[in-house]
Image (cartoon, rainbow, N blue to C red; front, side, top):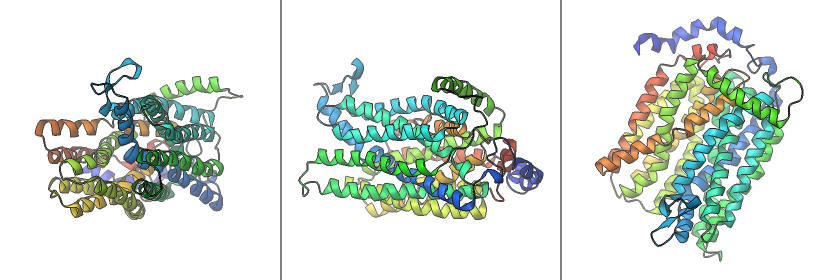
Length: 482
């Protein structure tokens, strides 16, 4: 590591880019030229519209993926299983209890293929809103269609889950790519943090309503399965209704990569494949951006694994019941709003990189505390959930805004597709380490502490990224604090 790198992240970087920042303010693609940003009122209006896509789509990840769909789709698969407990999608024998996990894996693999292509087409065509809209409403329709998931229709559930999850991921790529275009460099941490806060607030609000319906279904005269299906479908309707706001308020920017003359869909698609190949080659020109992606890949995999495995740890090691686990999920959602806004304010004062590094120290301490958490005491489990909530939203929001500074202007959607691929494409690594540790030791405490390695390695790599030099390398303008 050496002292040179550490100094480069602070004093040395601040001086070496005095000229670079001025030069890069008019960098390629025009996205960093202050003259290309709309007036204050119009820009704020776009930003408020942009927040509402987080508000619209976060309900899918919270109510559908995190809480309701896994257990319900598993029960549907079990109803369709043969005497040995297997279902046979496309003739392949799959244990019913594994069907949901395998379906999620298929959707992740497909999204890794679709996201970069959609990002390349969006940047090449300069028509981000139609692409974002198509995938947003395709995902919302598939989620709403989950109302018809009943009986033994496990194949329907699998197809709807794959379509919804691929659409969710692809629309988010294009949505994220608007951030560098609607916010000046100094605004991005705050704007990204507000977006995450909107998303967690929305997820909390709808989850409370869903839980009220689920827990009180008998008094409302509906059975438990119908209540779950209503919760699933309501997430799709929520997504569809509020996606209208960003699609109306965001405006298109001319693309620096659009081919001359009118281009049809086929031409844009072929161009998208060429642009994708070019993006992968182009990334080699920006090794510091690549280093950030590797750091994000590691620590974000730790974050995602803690989120997905916390309930397993709580139930299997600490003896928490389902009501306690759901309450902890809700607490995480609520406090993530506060955490995202708080870390956004800290980033204004200390810079996004230092704030993320601080959050990784907090993640490490939180996971370490989980190792010694006493069993059978829900209060301490809620304390752990509160600690996760306070750092969760801020880590994600500031990672997004810091990466937005490291993207070559004019290639936002392409590069954000790589950002999402680094997220979803390795989301198996943390669970694999967690699962192998449990298999070898038989202890969920050992499994949860094994995740510290992701935060430590991510911290070390991020510490070595000289962010001002990385911003200058892509020809962009850096804020005073980064």
